[in-house]
Structures are given as C-alpha cells and as structure tokens.
Amino acid sequence: MSGRRVAAITRRILQQFRRDRRTLGLLFGAPLIILGLLGYLLRGGGAVPAMGVVNLDDGPLGAAIASQLAQSKTASASGMSRAAAEAKLRSGELAGYVLLPSDFSSRAQQSRVISPEVHLEGSQPGLSQTILQAVSESFAALAGQAGGVRFAPQVTFLYGGQTFDTLDYFGAAFIGLVVFFLVFVITIVAFLRERGQGTLERLMASPLRRGEIVLGYMLGFTVLALVQAVEVLAFCLLVLHVHNAGNVGLIFVLEALMAIAA
Amino acid sequence: MAAQPYAVEVDGVVKRFGSLRALDGATLRIRRGEVYGLLGPNGAGKTTLIRALVGLVIPDGGTVTVLGRRAPNLDVLARVGYMTQQAALYPDLSAEENVAFFAAINGAHEGVREALEFVELWDRRRSVVSSLSGGMRTRCSLACALAHKPDLLLLDEPTVGVDPLLRVQLWNRFQRMAHDGTSILVSSHVMDEAERCDRLGLIRFGRLLAEGTVAELKGQAGVDRLEDAFLKLAEAGGK
Image 1 (tube, each protein chain N blue to C red):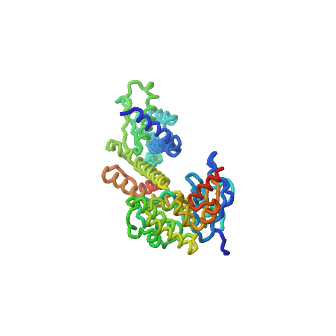
Image 2: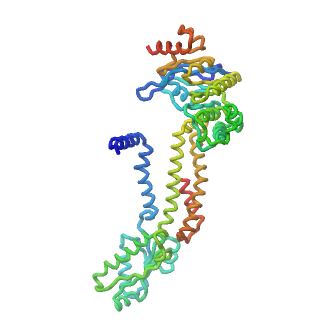
Image 3: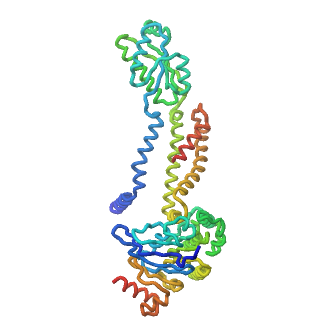
C-alpha cells in the first residue's frame, strides 16, 4: 500500500467537497435538522408536562405534598377531582396525575411508607419519567419532617407500562423519521442524477417553469412515498408488533405528510 | 404574424465567467430555413452562445432574439429543439419513453415514432437507454430534440460518436428539414460537416471572426480548402 496514493485520494476528496456546497450542507446541516426532529419527536417539544393532583387525604400529609407539587418546576401541577383527572389523562391533556387517598396520612404513620397512586398516560416515556420525578421531589422536600418514612409510589399506566419494550415507545417516532429521511435522501439523489446526466439542463431549456418541475417531482415522489408509508406501517404493526392503541389511518396520514414534506 | 427574416439575432452579446470573457461581443444572424454552422475550436464560445439562445446563460450585455422574441422566453422555448453536447437522457427509461417525455414537456403528444424513425432507433425503441451504445444514445438525444417539431433546432456537436453512414443520412435529413422551413444551428469542428451548411460562422475568443457561405469564406481567406480558410481566418482574428 502506498501512503502517497492514499493521501492523493484523501486530498482529492477534501478538495472536491470544498466546492460542493450541497454535500457540505448535507454533511454538516442535515444532522442538526435530523437530531432536532428526533429530539422533538422523543421529548414532545420540551415543554413542562401538565399533571393533575387529586388530594382526597383527610390528614395533613396530602395537603403538604399537593402544596409542594404546586410549586414544582419539573411539572405543571394543578388540583382537580378524580373524574376530571381521569378524563384529562385520556384526552391527552395530562401526562399523569397523582392521587392521594383519604387514608394517605394515617397509612403513612402506621406503615412508615408513603405510597401515592401515580397514574401515567405512558405513551411518552420522557414525560412519564418527569411526572415521577416531580412526585418524588415533592416527597423529598418533606422527608426531613417525616423521618424514617419510605417512598413507594404505586404506578399505573393508561398506555404501556411493564409490558412495553423500547420499540413500543420509540417505534412511532421512528416510523415518521425513517419515511422522512429516506424520501429526503432519495429526492436529493434523483435531483443530483438529473444534474449529472445533463437532463436538468434540458428541462431548464424547455418551456417548463421551475414550479412545474418542483410540483411534478413532488407528486411523483408522493406516490412512491405513500406506498413506502403503507409498507413501513404494516411492517411495524404486523411483523414487529409495535403496540398501537390509536387510529391506524391517522398514523398513515402523519406518515404521508412527513414524506410529502421531505 | 409577419414572418421574421431571421430565426436568431444575436447582437453584441457579452458573457463573462469571472475574468474569462466567454462571449465578447458576438453578433450573428440565422435566417429562417437555413442550416447555420457554428465553427470554432474548443473553448471558443460555441456552447455558451447556444446556451444563451435557450436562456441557460443570461448575457452580461447585448441582446438575443429567438423566433422574433427577446430571450429568454418560455413560449418560444416550446418551438425550439435543443440537443446538448452530452447525450442528456434518462438511463433507466427506454428510448421511446425518453422521447415521449421530452415531447410532452414541450407540449407535443405525437411525433415520437417519426423522431425515432428519423434517427433509425424505432426498432430499438423499447431498449433501456443504459443498454444503448454511445452512438445510439446520441441519436436518441437528437430524437428528443426533434419530436415536438421545433421551428428552430439547436444542435451542439450532434454527430459525435455517430458512424459515418448514419452521419451522412442525418445531414441529408437536416437539409430536408431546413428545406421544409426549420432553422438549424449546428456547432461543430468537423470540416466535412461544415461544408454541408448553408452558411458558416467562425467563432473564436467569444467573437464571430467571419461569416458567410463556404465559397465566401474560402474567397475571403484566398484558399481552396475550408480547413485552410478556417485556420487562416482564425489566425487573423487572433491577432
């Protein structure tokens, strides 16, 4: 192996890309866009999640925890009835709610265990973790006052829970991302081929308007992307058995929108 | 509409690429129904001039008029056939699909068979372009420029890679098309092809050095062979 020949190839690659702004954009710009999208998909936009507090406790402990939660910066907590909390959890307004039962204080005194009921929506593991963290922090703030007490929340999930694996949580995000990314790359490759083989020059020398070229491209790739969207969705649901409790048609529409946007 | 005497009028066109003046005041006229040969060495400005006619190059100065309208004009482009130097085709489509596509974007729904027969590719119409030889691709590219029956045909070195027999046939057909009213601009540096043009323009350093029929150019240079005339006029123009 000749070091000089290898160095010549390396130098040629770097020289070539120095003048290729599109590839440089793809190399250094696209990862930031993709990671940004991935972060948004997995973290749900990064806003503080909303949680409900249902305080039915006859004793003082429930009120103290509710008060701590109301001041929490980890989650945005607000008091409500059990029925309202349950309804909002199902509608997706709440990422979770904590229920402090009527015998909460007395049981804590007897058994030295604080065990609030934490009901989580569960579809986004990041949000569920944040709610649990907020409840845990509210207890930690009171731990000094109630020495020797153990914290053991009873966690239930509306969706997911112990039976969900990583793919169940991330599958939904990846369905959209895979379709978006692949259509994006294929469109770029097609356009680069159009330039490389000289046909773009021929198109630009024809009566075609730029808008017509873009629209024609979009419609052509949309047909392919829709077929791909059906394939990816069917594979995830039927082969990988990614858990789904929602409307499959809506997932397809979202997938199709991602593909068209790409 | 009154017929314009010229299909193409180029007046003092200047085009710079950085410090390079690819066109440096080029001026020429192409009459309707004539085969006009644009002759010049590599880098003389032939392709830049043709690209200016179809709006791919916007001149820094001067004017370009094509079929009576100032270029670039999208309506006029539907009446222009442009064959690029490289056989610009879709390699995964068949010859027929390529020609049909370029006809369609120029607003024509017929003429595919006629164009493929013109370049003798009708029998290979179903062949995918990537499986065709270089000469066949050139012919297919020519068919793409012809299918919509343009009034002006711009051919950038159209016979490169075409065998001598077919080259003769193509030139006979170009002349017949011109006789039927199509104006044809052919860039070339092959002298025996140049002899077949109605008129010639010699271009070098982005300027038209001489223009006229083959006989006129020979007379201007005072020589018997076109090649000698070209060399002499190019030398004189370079001084």
